[in-house]
Image 1 (cartoon, rainbow, N blue to C red):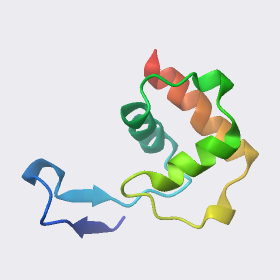
Image 2: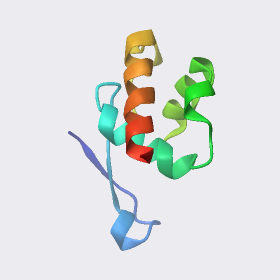
Image 3: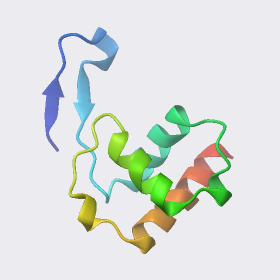
Image 4: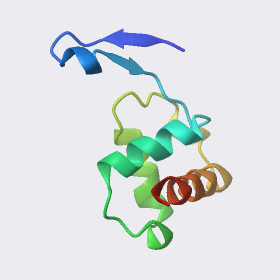
Length: 82
């Protein structure tokens, strides 16, 4: 994994882990922090796909995602909330 330094951030957030589509658990945690009130089960995959790409530290080819990956992220996010 690669790390980036962001000197303008607070010390506890100076290092961001570069996330890929395969980092399902990390993505789910970040989504819960960014969107704590969303109805996960009724979320459109197009919105989920967009939100994942907007997460800090996410850096992967958008075309590498698919329905199976998005569903796994969605279910892991649901588990994270419980």
